[in-house]
Image (tube, rainbow, N blue to C red; front, side, top):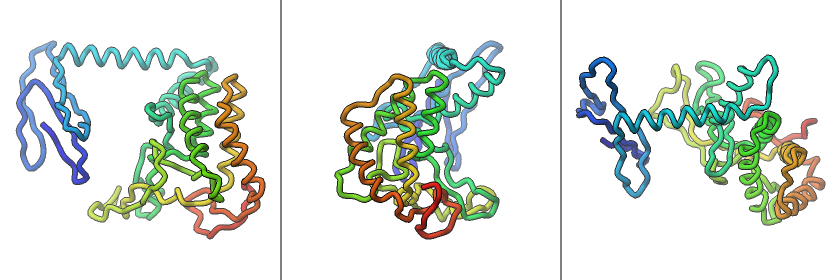
Amino acid sequence: MAFTSDSGERLSLTATCEFRIENGTAFAEFTLDHGESIAFVLEQLDQNGSVPASLTVAEGDRQFRETVAFWHDWVSKCTYQGRWREEVIRSLLALKLFTFSPTGAMIAAPTASLPEEIGGEHNWDYRYCWIRDAALTIDAFMRMGYVDEARGFMRWLGKRTREWDGNSESPLQIMYGIRGEHHLEETTLDHLSGYRNSDPVRIVNDAHSQFQLDIYGELMESVYIYNRHDWPISYDMWMSLSGILNLVSKTGRSPMKASGRFVAVENTSFTRS
């Protein structure tokens, strides 16, 4: 069975039992004896209308075991052996889940429209890649032995630096979509009341248009950390960075937006810049 959202996104739900629909909700009734199980598969369908896959119990069990083995192997690569190893691993797992492996981008948080305070209006969408946050995440990954994630982000970052045509006074945006999207148009979903009536419900984020000079410091810090671990950036990326830094050296005292959506001020000078 397939579900289609107002925006056209499609999800399929499959199993070896029968479903029925009541008021837009899927129901299934089945009987299992002791030791028996059933596999349900919920997946996103692509735009060309691919046929959803239905798994047998054996196939579902095999894929589950493969998933567990993947994460056990990933955790075993952690080089931290201190007293807080369990807590460090839990944090690293969260950061890993923030990464988008097809491009290497790292989102700030997997949340949208959660209020900073109940009933407040600061309900931002953080499912995007902020240069500042991702640079700090790179440091954590590299220190703990996770080079692949850092390399993926540097490839993503390198593409962003090479997009600058030399004309704009702001070579980099402070944030992008996980596929490198530049134009992020924030909107509100007025038909939703929000978490505990904390409206408006916002999706996407207009912060991409803000001018914040400190991101170039975080950009170079991530490059420094990456090189310090014997993974030099490409020549093309270094040439792009050189042009960006030349521009920043001339505009480094320009007024900028506060590095946070909670500060309601116009562009001004900050010690952080």
